[in-house]
Image 1 (cartoon, rainbow, N blue to C red):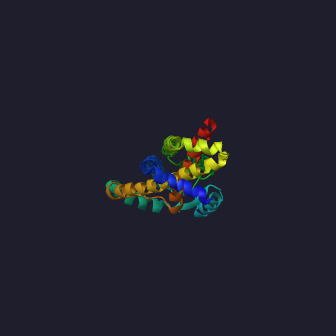
Image 2 (cartoon, one colour):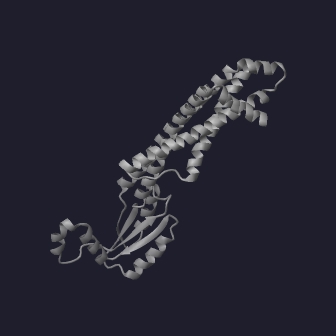
Image 3 (cartoon, rainbow, N blue to C red):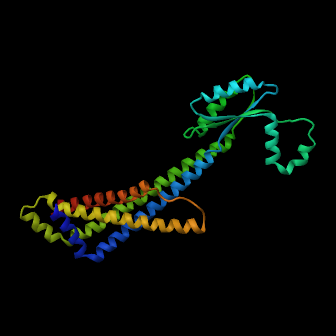
Length: 285
């Protein structure tokens, strides 16, 4: 094992410029991947905040007793999709309207009676705030005999679904494209190192060295380059995050586990690319 580590480290000393170029190239490729992931994380957080505003308003018929509304709240809370239910009286609805629609204060002052109905405001649990679940819950509560109307902003919820799907698909495609580019870049740099030591490898094979013995130092070298590239990419991502956070908008950076995944991802890519490049060369000698 110590021989494998020594041979892998010697490759850095034999060609420091090539090693530095490899690590830098890997780092920038992974930097783009990490930026895509960072944008995706902040977009997901933003969508989560928007999703928290998804609710269903069940407007009650005038004259519906409070006891009936209270029993209905218990029934709705029993739905597996429902997180919370708030009973809004007619008076509370008018107070809220006066506060949120201050520009119509003159209209409210001229009212002789409260035109707003009582309602149940239904909030759904995370994971159920998509158009299908919202529609299912709305259809169920619409069947209550005291229900006057049910509204949940159908168009708005469907647009939120489309935005969520588009964001996920775009992030996946861009991330996959740059991950593939990273594999090609790492494989090319390892391939250059292998070709540089082609004669040495041929001699080792002639004296009986197994393919595994020849392969291990290159695999370790690719793994180290991938890990170092991942660390540099993480540092570059943090620098970009600080700039954006200070001058554009506030977001969040990777959590410790998410940052570790970037490094692990780079390490895995380095190992994979090295295995492919070395395996192909060994089949040729």
